[in-house]
Length: 50
Image (cartoon, rainbow, N blue to C red; front, side, top):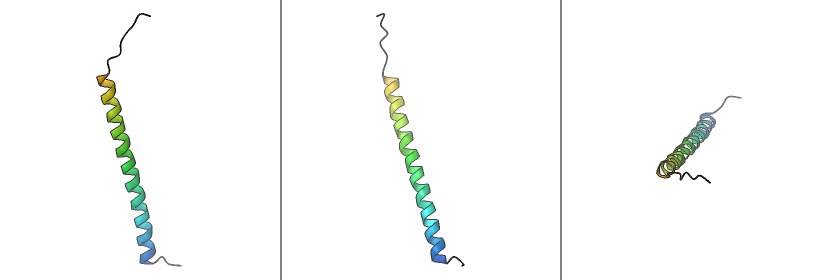
C-alpha cells in the first residue's frame, strides 16, 4: 500500500514537532544551567575551621 501525500505530510509534521520539542527542552536546560552557574559564581563559600 503506497503512502499518500496526506500520510507523508502527517508523518513529517509529527517528526518536526518532536524535533521542536527536543530543541525547546534543550534550550530550557541551557537556561537552567546558566542560572545555576550564575548563582554559583555569586555565592562565595565561607570557609570555617570548625
